[in-house]
Image 1 (cartoon, rainbow, N blue to C red):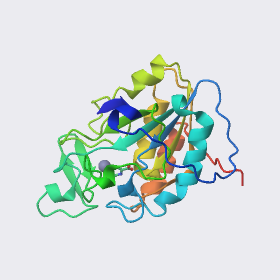
Image 2 (image 1 turned 120 degrees about the horizontal axis):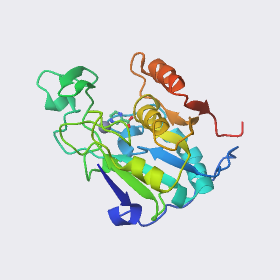
Image 3 (image 1 turned 90 degrees about the vertical axis):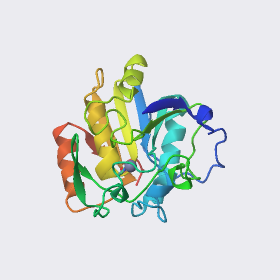
Length: 235
Ligand code: VGL
Ligand code: ZN
């Protein structure tokens, strides 16, 4: 994993702003927004399409505008070719099967978010300010990383917890793709961060992959970790 300033990884221009919906959110003192994996491969037409993944864009852009670049962190799934989470890396396996890796059971996916590919790029309508922080994860060929804090081996840290701690954040709000995987694990790890007292997910600014049972287990597990589900659109 690695942490960058957006401009340093070639994200220099913000796209033209689209019309923003009304949002019922203000940034609270000590609060940071994490925008998870709003990348082409998780949007309709992408390799690991999340149904309606692109429908969250107006809300997400509205939130980035409210929180401001300095209080927004973007994550980017960033796999090398031949990654261990790809079904194609395991003979006889198909996407959505599971396999046993060194660290435990891993769901297998279509090849997606390969470093440098179009699919790995942020959606072209996502506003990524050039001074925002970007966390790239999943770049170890042997280890997947749903969370933006800790890889699936439950050992390797991305460094994001240190960023949160050093900036003194006490509250974290999480949006993006997909609710039942990377949003879930990112929010749960945020709740375990030193100094963090409240984590919420704006549910309407997420969409789910929706494998059997995954949305339900995400909801249960988030609730058990005191992560609150809210909506951000002012109905
Ligand atoms: C994700 C599956 C594999 C996600 C990433 O962003 O939720 N899901 N890689
Ligand atoms: Zn991935």
